[in-house]
Length: 437
Ligand SMILES: Cc1cc2nc3c(=O)[nH]c(=O)nc-3n(C[C@H](O)[C@H](O)[C@H](O)COP(=O)(O)OP(=O)(O)OC[C@H]3O[C@@H](n4cnc5c(N)ncnc54)[C@H](O)[C@@H]3O)c2cc1C
Image (cartoon, rainbow, N blue to C red; front, top):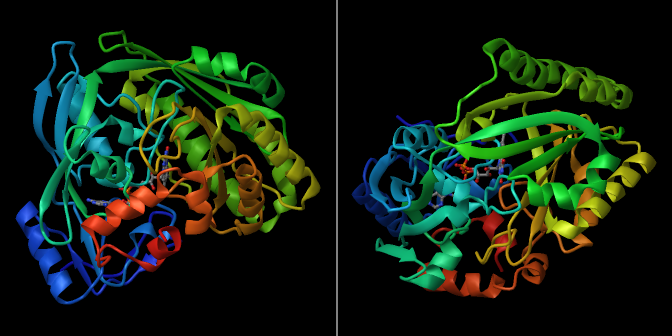
């Protein structure tokens, strides 16, 4: 018996679907869809529930592809790369470990690996690195079951417009059943993490972002402290020097998760403590260097619950955006305990990609799940929008179709393709109605 009530990871979205299905084969997906259409019930797919928005919420039929997981085929190229086809419910965590055993890797990942492959690509999940796109740019082809039960394959050479729409399709076009990923030979990453100041980091930003394979930094609000992370790609057979168990427990589990949870509980009651605590936290995270398998360096565990908004802005604007956020915080009475995360991505050509057509910087702001986020997120959103910012599709924002259309050249093309594959909006929801009109 499948539990019908559902909530997302952050606990800020709830759903009470009339029916919740976990098909064990592609044919079963078709039967579930058929029954939903016959009963005039809307359908939403759900992956790992790691989006902060109601994007997976439905009171109709919720389909989980948790039983459709695993690698189906590997087609190797002479240069060591490969096209790997996976069932769409496969979680990134299991996939990356299995790829390593095959001598392969995903070329870039976000900062966690809990997501399903279909869920991660559908909202434009990304990592960092000015030469690298988000996870959807690694998609070579995908297979989609449309509302009428047809299985449609798309790639650059086959149903190309559907491919442009469906790589970041918001679950609005059908059920993704299989994804073929362009994988690269397994590689290691050397991670160098060190404290710095916001002023120094911004002064050298262009050069750093261009020189380092995967650069990101965390800025501690109310201070000028930042923690920088530089990941450099090394061959898969490089000598690995992972973090020792004690250091990794101290830094990642204790300082970043357990102590941080405790601090957040305290500052929720006494927000005035935050600026001083941020200065202490920024200093507590000392420099460290380690080398490990790429996927272990990219992703880490997050146990402190928060809500998040993330905006993609033209890379050249990120310095201005951060200074404006700093200025706003100085004037406001808000105290923010969570570091602001800044990442980078290459321009791409996916219609609804936040990095469509421009080198991109991402600014992610977080708020502890027990504290109100609205005033802070609204202020950052206004700053980002003033430079043509685009919100992450899986994270909180206040935009609707009218504003989104302004920032996406192919917004109406997306709607046209959606109309052609799902004319009666079987895969619709109130939330999608807000975004896609
Ligand atoms: C702690 C945390 C860390 C995060 N880190 C990052 C990060 O580093 N970078 C980043 O960009 N984002 C990040 N995110 C956001 C996250 O990657 C996205 O929200 C992602 O979509 C979640 O994947 P999921 O499998 O949980 O999908 P869900 O949230 O369950 O679903 C997302 C969308 O995918 C659709 N979908 C799911 N499966 C299918 C399918 N089979 N067919 C069609 N549509 C489908 C759903 O309908 C929905 O529209 C993070 C989120 C959390 C909670």
